[in-house]
Image (cartoon, rainbow, N blue to C red; front, side):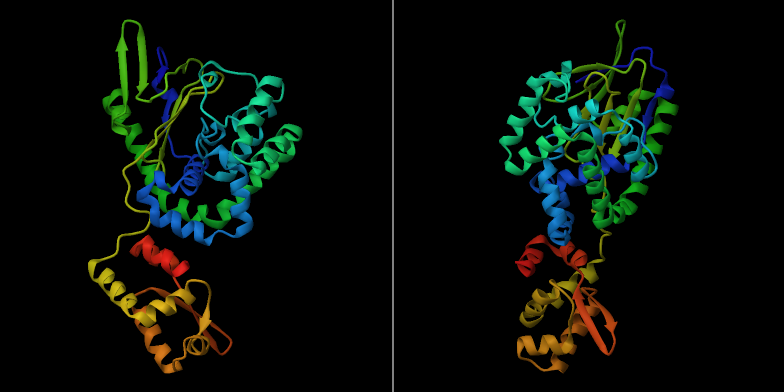
Length: 360
């Protein structure tokens, strides 16, 4: 895939993180966890914590980020907050927004451009046919978007805001700083050593080609495509959730945007070896394993656990002390009761098989 940047001033080429783009990458990881084995702990924990109503809404609209990534998730001018980027998205006209949102399957016309389903009957039928292959909920969603674009756009914004409240805000606090640092490094590398160095540093699958015909950024993709940054610019968006994907927005009428994965640690901090040993020993006891199955689902008092498992309250307290010392449970007081609950985020980092067993 080729982006023509002949004559483009270097100041029109930007490396910058985007909350909206990262949310899109996170939603893709949730819908296709097999693509992202490095994120298994995060996807398992996050999916388990989703409220059923939110999970149901995500399923309804997931063609926007599952097999393809809608271009509305790749802003050419990133902002500091998700709210600001959603405000920018609100200013896009309906035809452009709906055309991008309903690009359900990769197709040759993406490279050459196609009319919006709002104004073209053929594209409208295509969107409905593609949605039909994905289920009745998806067909209903597409029909609603075609009939009421403003209402459906508001629905999508609320969905993304609810995702931010449910899990993404905390995640962005952890990865946003790293992505900003990566973008600063690439911008400085471009300033000191040139664009070729910065592009290659971002991904080995990208190179800068220069000859008598001009300058081009070439992205190694299976698809064939060509676009020009003339009159606009090029934006590179680092992502902690994207590996192994490398996305390149290149449809006519849109500024070229590339989302590239950065080298990153797991989304949780690595625990010391002694801490891991302590946690594994804590859950190895058969009774504590059984107690964890209850504690993974909700908060329980010592008396409730004793009654459920037919052991004494002092026995439960001893087991809770071991789990607490290992950092596997949280406690809170409600009146005269102390309630215990498994810290699913910590447990997920021990291994998804154990987490799945206690949540089964």
